[in-house]
Image 1 (cartoon, rainbow, N blue to C red):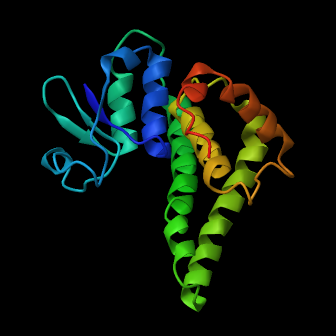
Image 2 (cartoon, rainbow, N blue to C red; image 1 turned 90 degrees about the vertical axis):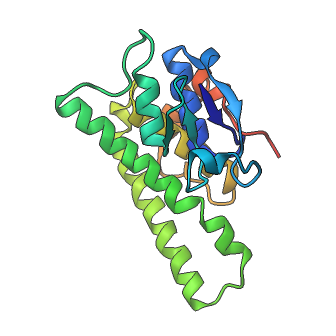
Length: 199
């Protein structure tokens, strides 16, 4: 399998963290990076990452799809529960973590542009989404496990991205339970080995 690479992308990190948790990272070959390899367009017309090319040549894209495919390989415990409340909770938590990343990643471009009234309003809306999501996660922190579901992996990647890109907007104050959970899972191989480069 080939997976697009980007050391800074929280979505690629999510896919690699899933592969590590599933014990199949050695079956993945790093591949094109969006915007740098035109071959990516042959596999993903959106030219977005992560894109996974399976061993039989099928192209998959968007992190929820890529991660669910990775979860179908190997014998390790599944990250996507099969059915019932556990599945819906894991998918909901995945959506919450993805939502934090979706609200955070594009804001970097907006900050670099002239901050007119419309742009300031957009940034405030995105910041509000993140603030509310972090508050929600604090209320659920005691139920979070050791990266045993796609939801927990996505949440950890989202918090890591906030640390990486927005250290001047710390999320830990007022969220001690979530802080303690994140400190624990950050030391696990799936997170430690996929951390973005410092600096």
